[in-house]
Length: 251
Image 1 (tube, rainbow, N blue to C red):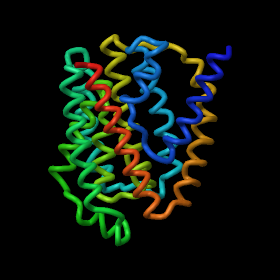
Image 2 (image 1 turned 180 degrees about the vertical axis):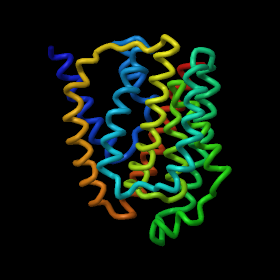
Image 3 (image 1 turned 45 degrees about the horizontal axis):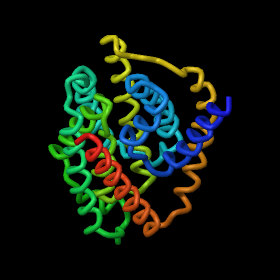
Image 4 (image 1 turned 90 degrees about the vertical axis):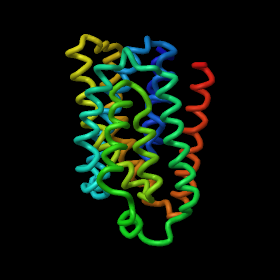
């Protein structure tokens, strides 16, 4: 009993943190829950968890949703997610993790060079790459995420590198995630790899997800540009460390 209370408490704390800044998704959660589930069970559990929280976050942060980026990212991300979910069993985890690390490292140095945005967010975003670059990021991140890897790292850091606020990243990546997670679950179900366990925990996670989303929105509204920039840099560094550690463990 104490074990499950500890799991729910951990999920509640992570839900609040994830409502403020998108956590390094599968690179963090799957290894964590893989300690008491099989990897397939952990992937399904986390996919359902992210679908639940992303749906709520999209609603809570809806006024910050960048619909222009959503329309560019979502269709290609869904296509990538379908491919990733079907090919997940044949993907080379080490090679894909190295690729993700390269993307995150590139976006990290790009964000460092940009510094704290000196103009408002809309002006900064108007200078971002459009069309082909966004589509490429969308299909790559969707492919990786559909396969149970850290595709969210690629998409989130792409948005960070182009000076979106925490609220805009939170809303936009959550909305894209809803589509990816739904497709991933459907493909896994059709392919017979949907392994559901600990489903009763979701009943307790629903109120936790709702409360954490509103608390996260309140926290982000209190942060100025400098604080948001520092949080983003710290989050990107954590992502790099987690990816590097995963590569060392896979070698």
